[in-house]
Image 1: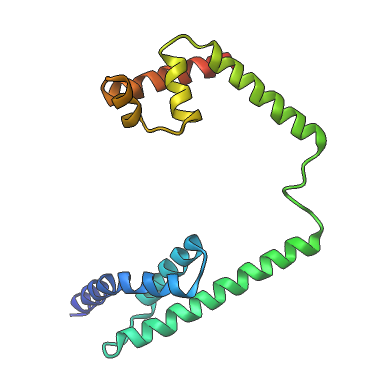
Image 2: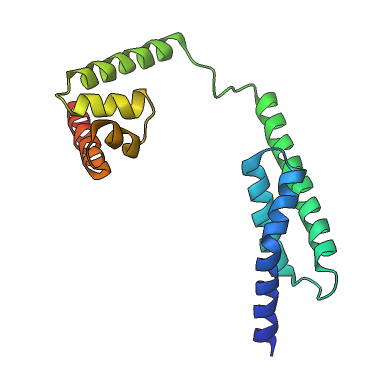
Length: 160
């Protein structure tokens, strides 16, 4: 009998999961964090066995508490990072030069590729087109474009 009740609880939570996600999005501005809040809330609901009556009111409190706790933890983490004085994004000038040099080498290697690999890589990574868009422009199958991209990336990896 307990197994049947647990299954019914899970099914009801699955029905409510969409509503929980919407509520989390309203409470938390960051989309990634709101999804974390929703998932954590659903996990807690499974662990705590929600009441049979007034499930949405109970879930509302659970989601709000979870959002508050996760937001508080994020604020503590940010404060700790600020107070530690260590900045992860602080780059040294030589790092910037090394990154620019690497980009120059990569562009040179791409430009040195033979056709149709060069054009395919430029269309995909410089123009941001999908394999399907490139295929349509060139009048070939999307699989051909993906094959060209794979071969081009293999050639580039071999150079580096």
